Length: 273
Image (cartoon, rainbow, N blue to C red; front, side, top):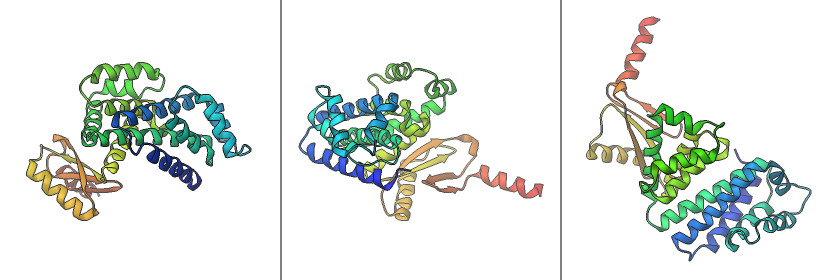
């Protein structure tokens, strides 16, 4: 978990970026997001640079100027200002800076999708791609293989999804492939689904059922969960006949397992005692 000082540094930079892009178009914000994520990719491969940009013996202004000198002529003024603000803050460890740059880029990308009224589609596309990967062991192993070059894995996904998803979705999947915050691919993808839902002020409920729910059943379940959690809920439904019947719902760390499979397993354990 990020320290309180790094969270404050992030909040300051995020506020600066929000102010600078207040009147920007979705495309302009997407460009800024791509620039920030490109800087994150650079920092991921340059541990010495991460250390220099978080060196407590340097002043915040000095760290900011160091970054500006590296980015001069390569990114927009908005991007340079936001990232200079970020590195001028304090971080408990160099890895926290990388996490913050990644989050800043992701948030900007989600902002661009929101301005284009595509955020709900992006959320759904990320989840559905995760289901595709989970259902294809060869694809899952390939995308999660840390020994395979990131560029090769990104090209594989680009070829698979070309023209089939929003540009923001494809870019976020690239972020997941790189490993958001050092996480594995599938965990990164799940985190991005949840960040996208949070941008829409929604909780994510992962629902497992034996057969597809009707639209009325989905609405009823979403309504019940919204009442429980005090905010709208985004259902992510996975159909798994192996559970036989009933429903399993996970919201954050809360698990409600009313499946027949769970009841059968509980009965077997009881008989075994």
